[in-house]
Length: 224
Image 1: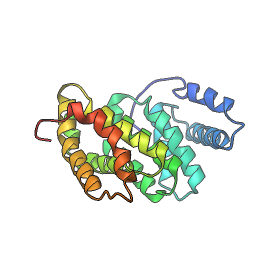
Image 2 (image 1 turned 180 degrees about the vertical axis):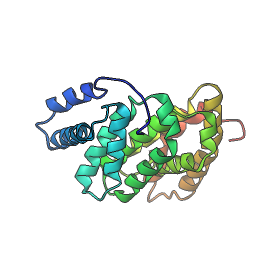
Image 3 (image 1 turned 90 degrees about the vertical axis):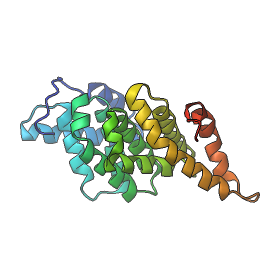
Image 4 (image 1 turned 120 degrees about the horizontal axis):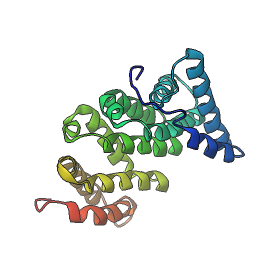
């Protein structure tokens, strides 16, 4: 990230203003504190305050041990930072980004906030990749993370994961075709396993998948 160039006076100015308006809530204060701490760290290093510099600092923070609330705030700010990173950076740093996202969500699996914001990070990172990236181990780990949360008992987490999957299944062009080829097999396997395990006493997990199945059905191939 240190060598990436993405000139912008303050790439997170809009986020900063938004967080100032929500600073009355505990979540807002935590997120604003994270953003300000990152900006201070970049200033002390004497490096340009690019989106890449913000992303690098946030990833460094996630690599350290910290409490759940702080982690959720860091992942939230990272999700917004990734959305303003240049495409070339998102692609060249795909491997470390995938690693930090999946590791962080895995470490804090009990946190709905970390899961939701982690899924948003995954959405940005996955959506920026070219077709070849869908055949990599890093993509496999992000897809597995998203699929596992598609049947999460927490509604907001489940909705975020399912929306991601629907979006990726609806992609256009060559990359969209490759994504569907990878996802279709995994989605069919997940649905088959879930529906087979369904009983009259507990059909809740299967019901959680029905909406997503309806949305992706038009994109499935005949063999599915």
